[in-house]
Amino acid sequence: MDQPRDYRDLVVWQRALALSVLVDRLVDRLPQRSWKLAAQMRDASRSVHANIAEGNGRLTIPDYLRHLGISNASLNELESDLFFMDRRHPHPEVKEALALALDTRRPLSGLIKALRKKKDEP
Image (cartoon, rainbow, N blue to C red; front, side, top):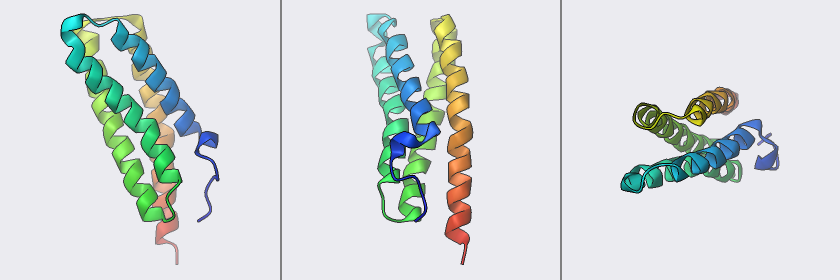
């Protein structure tokens, strides 16, 4: 399979990692009573970059795509939680995180599209 040998070279992984670091900072500001939301957001943000890395290490395109699908779903979950957080606990960094989530979604979608195309080639 013709793909980057190292997931760390992928822009999408780099952005997902930066998003996860930002989310960690954000949830530290949440009130103690919001610990479930904080845990859920941390898990979702870590799932995005972790599944990109794991998928990159798989030996087949279908396996890689499955992990990228999980990453995409986790990104959706995280964005939804960020919208909720923005309404309950507004902070300028929440908007920054939402923008970074969008900047992560674009290359993730592109990678998925490219791998699907490659998978369908004869």
